[in-house]
Length: 135
Image 1 (cartoon, rainbow, N blue to C red):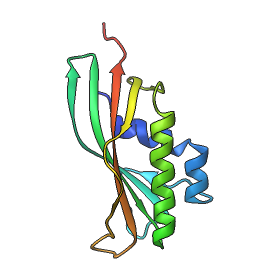
Image 2 (image 1 turned 180 degrees about the horizontal axis):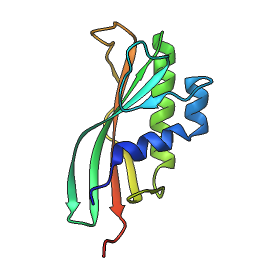
Image 3 (image 1 turned 45 degrees about the vertical axis):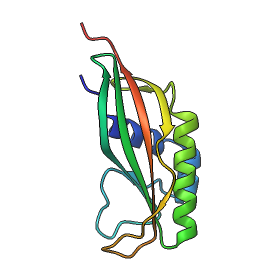
Image 4 (image 1 turned 180 degrees about the vertical axis):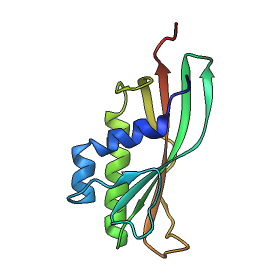
């Protein structure tokens, strides 16, 4: 079974105290950006990947986006999220297996949303998951 890396990363960020603190009273992490979404908010999107070793190691690239009402808050949200993923996701147990590594894949990109003009930063991580053995 191919791991659902988006769900694993969203679940990790939703249950991370530092991320919750950076996003305010309510942890706002999802794979979608709801219309009129409360801000600040993080969106996690699968943006590529490969099967590094068939049925043994999956490598997935994820884009993390941080929206906020102002640039400083968007920056704070993305830097906390990326730091927590890089330092805490490795060795995490996920539904389909264990995360063997989570590495920053790119630096930060300042990219205000073209549709809403809201402040937004983007970053990406490479997540490797070793799936549970299948009978």
